[in-house]
Image 1 (cartoon, helix red, strand yellow):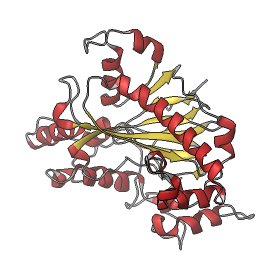
Image 2: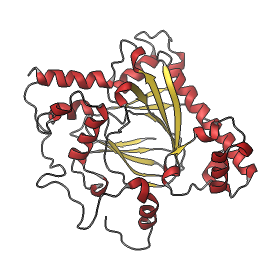
Image 3: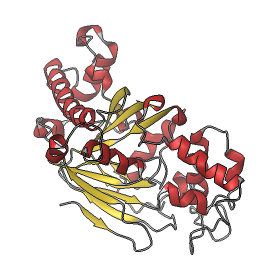
Image 4: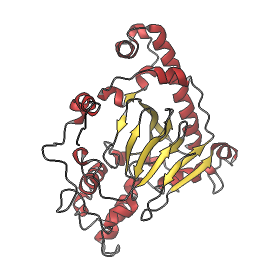
Length: 342
């Protein structure tokens, strides 16, 4: 049973659907089509639990595969394994075979089969839910290295205004995956619009706005765990499947070891009428603020944010590292048999 520890100052935006009922609902895109309702909730900045999604694979075998703690395997692009080119002709597959299985081709082929099984199950669910959308990309990322206490953040995708992204998660571990989430973008954006001078970002790439909000409100990697925003805490159980737009629901992984997550991209020019793009929603806030129709912006009460007097600060000497280049070293430091002050 998924557990949600709700903070009283944050909206309860958690909903759930039975996937069997979704399949049985009329697939006409009308008000009774649960595919439409799921996606309207997604666009409405909700976190959606999907019950009874069947994804069959050899859990024991997958759990036995030890992913090295490198940046590449932190966000393992499983499409490398899914490509048709055979192991003997693919340098990328040969490198993965060496890193994960010491060059054992038999184990690699077993792994290849399990990746395809998991990804096919995820895509079957998403392709059904997205029946009324035009899908442009169907990438699935495997995150099978240990994650401890990310910084609270919005997801930042390059050129994010040019597509709609859909992220579905499958907890493949035998323990819960623990998340914190906070106020939705739709509440944060107008609340801090004037205070953070967000009007200056109108016309800029959407990801710049999301990055500015993440840094100014929540801080960076060096101040993770010290954010002063209120947060829900969620324990996603083994086998849980959920959909959440990280561009609109700020989140952080507190602890987790094995998850698969989709990075579907939708054609922004072919969205159903009931699916406004994130870029259009943000532009509506810009327009309302510029016209003075939004009223006076007011920050959410009681929370000092980073880089301002009274905001959370990292300990002296802690710098903001280049995570991509320093990841291996950071990971090794995090498991030293001593007290590590971060």
